[in-house]
Length: 316
Image 1 (tube, one colour):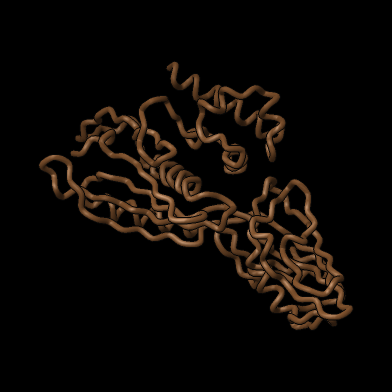
Image 2 (image 1 turned 60 degrees about the vertical axis):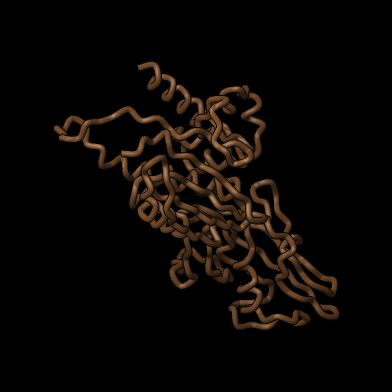
């Protein structure tokens, strides 16, 4: 059986928000198993944020026409689905969009606070002509996967709010390829290449880390302790950390922050502030954590409890 510490992780950037992550060598058959599992998780189960509804001034339904606006309301709603958002709070956020000058109305013209960040501000939403005016209020929520407007409860819709098909997933594309590799005399080992493209609200490495943790959490449910087993458990070492160039490095200890038992919201806040390891986290003071973007008192207490629990576990 191939030892776990023989498996290395490498990364190759293909372009903005697009990367190939390679895991090799793997035991025979593991490449297809891991590749299929990661693809399904990445495409269906990652959290994100999206526009879920809009209130357009002077409009009561999506089949209306706005005077002075080239696009119909239905076309504008389709354009709203393309807005990609990085959100720093779990609560729904209401933002406004106003325009009165002729020309193209873009996502960057949306008025918002520190709760969100528009990832693609150049996205065109509508076109004003002549003396046309355009005003709308958008509702931005967090969610998982894809939720069509028809599935929204009518009780949840406010007066005048038009529901929008919401694509929450930050992953645009996932493709995997399994090929043969060798170690010494073993020639039937697997090499897994995961090609991932995101919408810019997060990175390929971040979504892979989240998916790996999610798979591990569900797999741990089958860890029946205290039951007799014919399998002999062997100590396993974690793979070496990935350096900036994509090569595995053992120069310093690197414990991914995903190993902490914290909520997805707190985890995303740490990652968005470029904190990727427990070691980096422990070097920060409480005051530094409190001033981080999207990091409140609740998240701070959660991190303190998680670090204390991990320290207790390691000392046991």
